[in-house]
Image 1 (tube, one colour):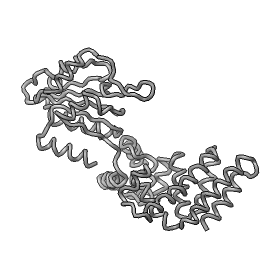
Image 2 (spheres, one colour):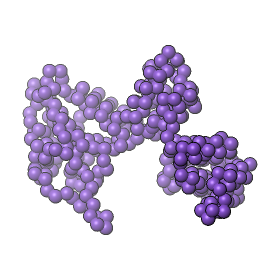
Image 3 (cartoon, helix red, strand yellow):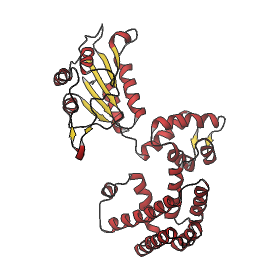
Image 4 (tube, one colour):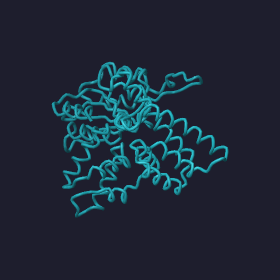
Length: 345
């Protein structure tokens, strides 16, 4: 959220770069950024003259330059937005080599323009796909304008965003409901906005939104159910975890996937516990283990529930269970129930 707030604050101060690339997976904030730029730069009555919206997959670089070089009409600025810009895509050859795409009409014209973009035009490229930061077009935009990565918000930012939206609507979430809602609909703000509107409509007349409301409007998916199961195991709530496993099996979830996720949870607890004991800085552990910071916080809290010997024994028991099930010597649920009760008691 910080990058978005800083961008809007710069806009309010009238600090506008001549060219931007908005990229990344957070679609909602990308669209909101373009909306705010249009509101600030394009005045009423001149939108058809000083605003161009272009399809990046249909136009050529020469078309973009032609629009960007147009002089604003009775205004200091004009805005040109190129959506779904294909100029930044990575082309892959065999062996994973990266190369520039073939020359499109006017590509050199565009590169020349980006070397000295007109201050009277604000040119914005947007894309939700991965970008190749080594390409000349990207490097020139970063040098003479701004390149902004619209990442998903952190769990903390999402929780604050949700609380703010609820207050504005005269509502409040119970902690359990807020957590379940973010697990089910997040981290995409686009989906959160859509699901939140449905939830507000469903709970019209009620000030407080509870867990049951969330489950009725936004039923948890497979990923969320598995996360709840392994979270319960990590906190030694074995009966709750077993109940969740039964529900997943009834929903035809593959038993092997459940066993893999359970084993992963205990493995992650062991790895986090080991790094903490070895004195690794807390901020470096999620990066080292390629783990989301929110997931790390939950697992770090679960480390207190198990010692290293118990965790090692758990992983060994789960491995033996996996072999026994695959060989047909044991049935999945009865064997898993016995194994987890031993681990969590």
